[in-house]
Amino acid sequence: LMLRSFAGGVRNLRCLTRQCARKTWWNCGRSLATEVKTRGKLYFQSDKVPRSILSTGKVGTNRDLLGSDGEFFGTDPIGLEVDIKSGRDRAMSLDENGFCLLPHAWKHVDYYDNHQVINSYYAECEALVQKATGATRAVAFDHNLRAKLRKEAGDRLRGGSAVQEPLVSYGVHNDYTLTSAAQRIRQLGQ
Image (cartoon, rainbow, N blue to C red; front, top):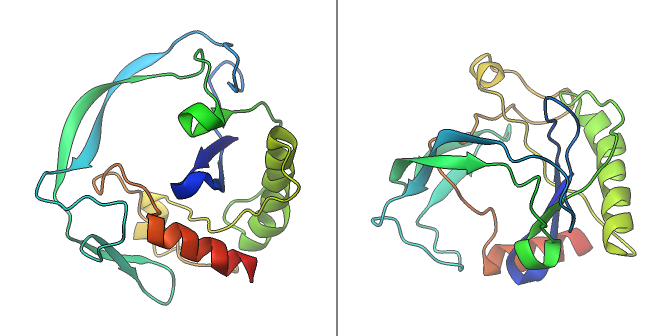
């Protein structure tokens, strides 16, 4: 599980899992694995694109009624070849780095079945976050499944929205601004 924080220090409970070829990895204030490095291309927005922690409405996408991303607007992605290093051997903490990696053996879930994701995976994520942070309540929300070939085939999650295109060329981004983070917390509290 990877925990990420978003604007205002509120915990974003979207749960992401990864597997190393050798073993499940984790790091939450501990140094545990050997460094792995590769090269890859990441996309960032050029200087033509306005940057703000406040919502400007100048960059984004509009989703259709099936939950599919439409055309992106206001973007100008620039590809940059970078070293990609494993953080598995670094001491990362949620408070200092905005994420940490935790050990957890996940129960099997069919990620293309919206009911299983919401009723099993969400609950498992919430319990793990509560245990790791000492929180009395955690709320998992808002997942997207991204798979290029399934998106091209027009697949949908059983009982849910359309499968999304991976955001490869859209670029490195944050889903929340100071405006939208507070608005989302209010919505979740209702």
